[in-house]
Image 1 (cartoon, one colour):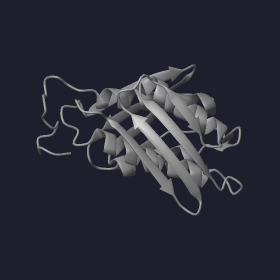
Image 2: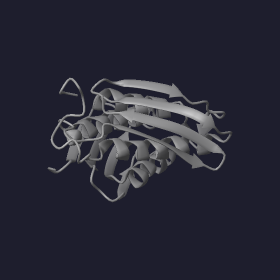
Image 3: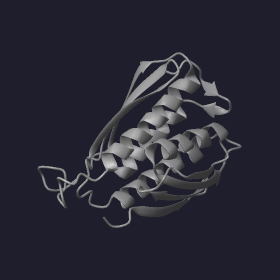
Image 4: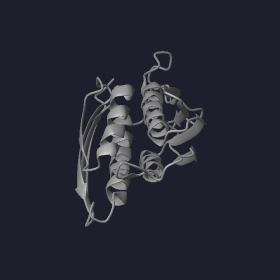
Length: 197
């Protein structure tokens, strides 16, 4: 299998984002977005998804974190799409439910070529630290749209907002890892009856 590494940069009047993603990594993560809790969540994607992830981002945090978080999602989605290429020989589907204490969020991934997000997560608190928790959904929507993948998040349990989000990000990493793994039975085939994704 050829190298599955992508580097994408995005610059707007509001943000500057640079991301390098290696789908065949070891979970190494070096992130700095200026949003501490978000950095913590991104590190879970890398560690539990076994991808190497480098993120350097900045922007108008004096307004709020919305633009930075969304643009990191856009850029990560673009990098994921580039790294996946034609998706030949991949499992395509993945799911995980990684518990975090009392919280449990099931995440399913389909490398479908069709962007969709189903977000059934109830977050009791409005903020974790300085992080506006509704930005988690915005981040995953941006990833799904720009990688052209389908994502489902279904909360099965949880009372603590930090724990719920941590379960969601960990589960996403693990589900993505499963979906991106080669399936030797497929050889070089695209995992679709249409012949393309």
